[in-house]
Length: 139
Image (spheres, rainbow, N blue to C red):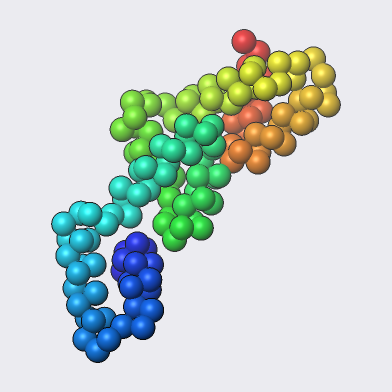
């Protein structure tokens, strides 16, 4: 059953009168069929929102997992392609590079700053290989 259907069903069934539980299930099922409640749409909106906050794949995946929605690498790639991104890895490396230049301008000359930047980017959900690639590419 859809994640949102389950949560709405639980909220609506606090102390239901007789027969209301089946009505609630039918009502929520009609919303799912009509597309009002959709895990895929929620996944797209949440992914777009987290990308705007400069989060990486792993952070987005964990955020959605707390909401009961699973984000696979293929679904993430599909969402990015819908946004006009052709090469996901290059896109991630470019985003990391932009964050490095903006937040840690001296990362290439100071090892301590580079370590701090690496930790920051890991907490943002970026992969270590993408971070290393971006750090080696000094633009």
